[in-house]
Length: 396
Image (tube, rainbow, N blue to C red; front, side):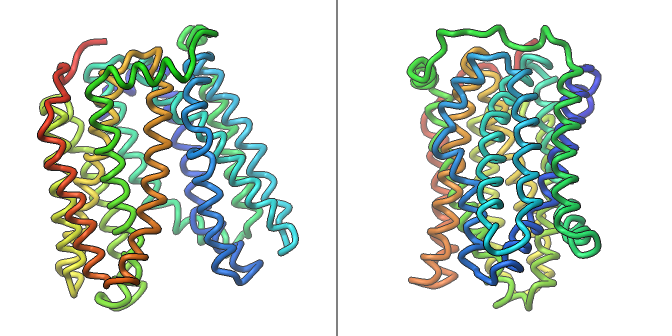
């Protein structure tokens, strides 16, 4: 996975990304806990999630236009500086009457992320090429994501307990400043030339003309919706069938371990196996692993199933991302990436709502079966059209 690290600009991008990602994930538990401590309201706590999902749904495609029109290096720097300023608003949310500052900060921070993520996703192929360097970069980023997600939430909870909420906010703000500084050190020539003619309609035209993008959009959305539905049911399942919160924590850790293993495995597979076949196999394996997990009654079965979900789920996320970066013209990649990010946010939000609703209306087991069948159906549907006729990998 370290091939991409031989490129100086990617090393800087990766280092900045690691620091800012760590700062953000330190707050995953801390923000809901802080809001609940201020209000005692489950609704107010749940709204923190809605505040984060709103900007991708509203602004995603338009952000893609900006990232294709402007210098992507400058977009990422500006987005990091904006997010650093946004999160500091939460320092002043010290009572229930100032809770609106938390929501405003989350919306602003998420808006910055809507600009940053498509710019970064389009910029990486420009830096490392579209051959083995790209698969190296994506697998390394996936490995980093898994590590941060495994380590940062409990670390953030510990810092919250011993140092307080404001300390975490300052750490997160500083992480964005470090990321902006690292990106500023990259070569100026690596940015995009500003193109005033870029528009949203042109992006849709490019998307419609690429069978791989047209096929991957619904396939990715279906998988993420089903995954979100099952993830939303994990806590009640753990309490009912595994014995409580400690067991749930072990299963989540198993997911993190699997995510890391999947990031290593996908490094070679994504260069050697057709995206259509690889995506179908990993989605189907994820569905089976989820079914095994939710059918288990002890950690003896649940933990290996959790690892398998992490392995194949990680591979399912990296495969379409790499395929898109290789197939989409770089001048349109920001817009296409933003459309996918918006679709992913909508699918995740729908799944997180529908899963518990089905469990409440029917039963937990029925909701699990529906989500697993949908995931498996999406895997099989992706095999029917031959949308991946482009080469598996090509040079820089």
